[in-house]
Amino acid sequence: MTTPNITFYRANGACSLVPHALFKELSIPFTDVLMKWGTNGVEAADGSLTNDDYRKIHHSGYVPALQINDTVITEMPAILTYIASLAPERHLLGRSDIDRAKAVEWMAYLSGSLHGLGFGKVFRPGRFSEDEKQFSAIVQQGKTFVANCFKRIDGLLKNVTFAVGQQDTVVDFNLVIFWYWGLEIGFPMQEEYPNYGKLIRRMETKPSIQQVVQLEGKKLAFEQQ
Image (cartoon, rainbow, N blue to C red; front, side):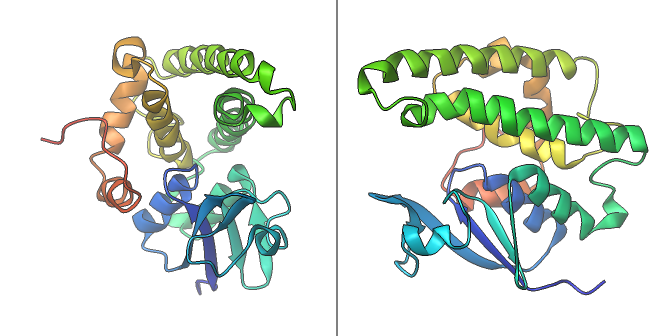
């Protein structure tokens, strides 16, 4: 299979860490376009793209985005599904029809609920109200929602090694960034969500995760032996 020309638009510490880690895991070459948050929204860190320029690539101006030859792919479930297709021998969407359905279920939940309705409120309350007086209440609503999501995730990971099936899938990679964000907003992650923590500890033994965490200026959650 010939790897297409891939341009990857990402920002350090954002959810784009997930496809970044998968590209490293699978040794897939890509053109790296580092983005940052500017006064008018997401723009290229080197000044080569304004937010208006980037919105011609990604309609909402968010990261990540993939440009595959002349086609742009946005939204995390779609991006992770595409990356998994580049290494079919790894079965990163699972090995059975049930596994694949569960992987999609996980991705939809993490993207739409945990990220969109939870961390979206915590990090971007202005998306939910134009009244700045409401921001504090919105952030707290988001934190409560995130905590409930984490509790559900921890329950789903009880007595299992992998999120889906009997091997790593894109879901295991996807779960990493939310753990880091939980730590960033002050949640006692290891104390409250031990099953989730076991998965993250395992994922952090992967050179791909370690490399991307370092490249993006993050810190591993667990000490490596």
